[in-house]
Length: 128
Image (tube, rainbow, N blue to C red; front, side, top):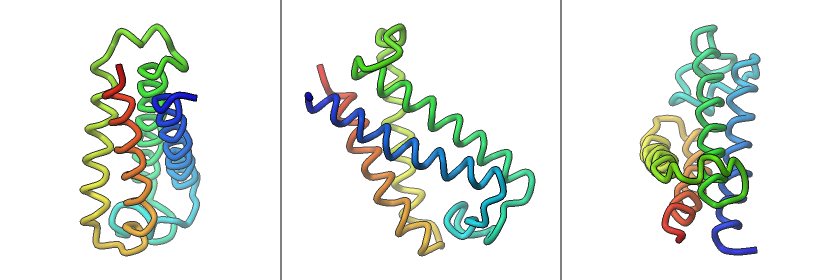
């Protein structure tokens, strides 16, 4: 396994986990204290459930971009090299936002996840 493949797989694993968390929120899981600054502890209200579902779709799109850049899937997107930079930028913003959230629970869970997403997507982006 190459470093690029390993990084793409690491990105995929943590990002699919994050997408699963968002889908669980969308379906009514009482984990609101771990998202959106803890503003909605318990179940999200309906509009936030829709937002959580959209977030899951965005995350899965980023997985596709990273896997394509690494040459592991969606080979038709390999020529769209700019897509990987969307994943890197999203991950960088995620690190910052999760670091400054007022929710300690959210920081403890999501800063490490976002950091893995950033490091792994950047590794894939910088690969030949």
